[in-house]
Length: 127
Image (cartoon, rainbow, N blue to C red; front, side, top):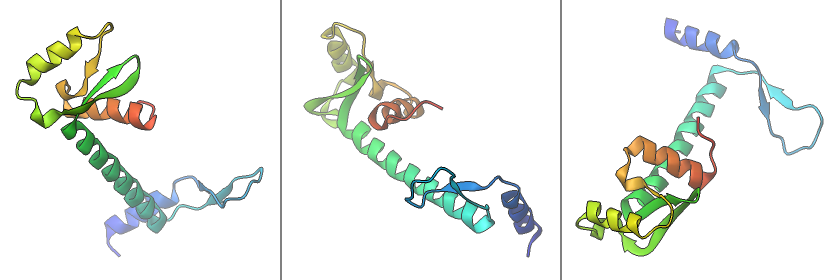
C-alpha cells in the first residue's frame, strides 16, 4: 500500500460518521463510519451530479435568453440566443422594455451566470 493511500485512509477514518437514510422514520439517525471506499463513492456521486447540473445549465445558457426579473429566472419563449446577431443591441432593447432592472445571464462571466442559474433554477442557496 502506498504512503498516499495510507494517508487517504487515515483522513477518511478521521472524519465523523455520516448519517444515512434507510427510509425509516426514527428519532436517532443511522450513522456509518467513513472509509476511503465510502468517501470515494460519495465524491464520485457528487461529481456526477455536478456534471449533470452543469450540462443542463450549458443547454439553457447556450439556447435561451435567460434573465432574472423580480427574483425569478425567466426566458424569452421562441427566441434562440444563437440566432441573435447583435446581442449587445438586443439586450439593450430588452432591458429598455422592462419596468424594473433585469440581469441577463449571457452578459455575465460563466461562473457567475452558473451560480445565479443554479440558485434560481434549482433553489440552491449561494455558497
